[in-house]
Image (cartoon, rainbow over all chains, first blue to last red; front, side, top):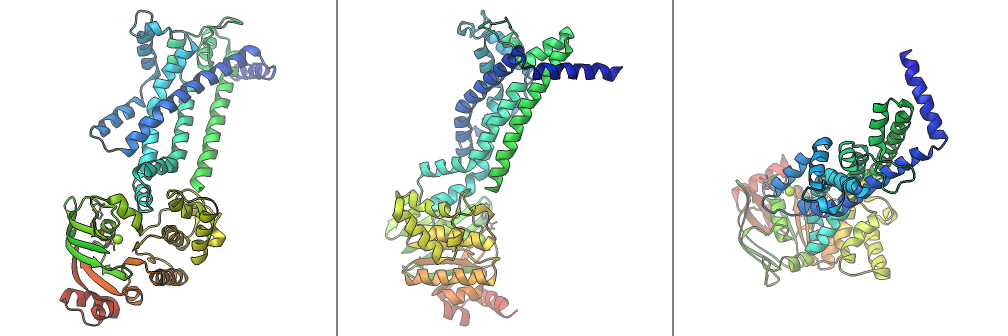
Length: 239
Length: 237
Ligand SMILES: Nc1ncnc2c1ncn2[C@@H]1O[C@H](COP(=O)(O)OP(=O)(O)OP(=O)(O)O)[C@@H](O)[C@H]1O
Ligand SMILES: [Mg+2]
């Protein structure tokens, strides 16, 4: 009996995925788009910060590093709440009009995953920094050339950090829910419903088939991205 | 070529170099021998200006090294005790020093292939450098230094842990470099190697240069008791 209930849900979900349900794909593509933009923004902002932290020896560097490390574990609901307070019409960033928009979710997720990109970039730089710097300098490179080569040697770790960041973004619920609001109007332009928020909603409503179908799609995306990351890692480790 | 006077270098509590006074002439092979921890690597790092935070004076070809570190680094190249490979092919590893000097195209290709051939690793050119054996990596490291045609080569234990064939190839490369007028500073545990290759030898202990002399003379009739003990211990025990 108990298992039948799950089996029916899975069978229904399979039908939904295989029939190419347009709502389901609309939501999945929005998730990928929103978190992809978040990962891109986090890369654009986070990689330079991580590179500077990995390469330089300024005072207070370890403090900055521990702040970013601490932010790695921030609960997404707390992040969602803080962002809501800032982005709400009466909040300090209310005038940006980001609340309940796709861009708002991307912005929030970008902040969430920024510490991942910064910390991992800094550690990949640090892991090659000492010996590569010495080698490059003794081969006659200037400071700038030494920095470029160090970043080049660390590039695999940097790319992997962006992939890991994307996975964290697409799988989080708190920010998408509080900043995005799970808005969905058929054919609407302002929709903000993503995979995680819709799974939460369908479970709450008892529409278990749709929830399982969406959950499967989310898992498939995360697995595919992880597989890509493992593949790249294997390729680079051997390189 | 190289004049060190009163050079000392500390790592926290450890005095890795104590008041080193040393002159190395252009075109000679200068061996630095001594036990582990004596300061050989540190001395080579100072000579190569990878260590810039030392006290005392270092004059390289008449210029003050400390105020011209990049100039010195362009003329002095160090090959490390443990070879570090870039994550690229053997060819690109060796080509790096030329590329940063703005050399490209057929000149680059010719020069890289010539040194690869010289060290017997031309057939490895397209291989991933990180996947080579220890001996092959060491040969790539030497090729990478040779290709840039520096004046001084600081070689740190270039044949440690290598088999006889690799030792032979590397030692003949060093002899060839000497013929071409290169100055070589060779740190080694291996007294036989110092004897085979060097014109002069310095014996180091606890960061100090105990004795410097013509290699033959230093080995046959060392003046300092500590040098004698080291040489006898190593050669006859
Ligand atoms: N980066 C460093 N930080 C702290 N101490 C160091 C560092 N490098 C060297 N030392 C210390 O300085 C002393 C001299 O070291 P060095 O590596 O020059 O010796 P070495 O003669 O090259 O030894 P080996 O034959 O084992 O290579 C040692 O006591 C070592 O522990
Ligand atoms: Mg050493």
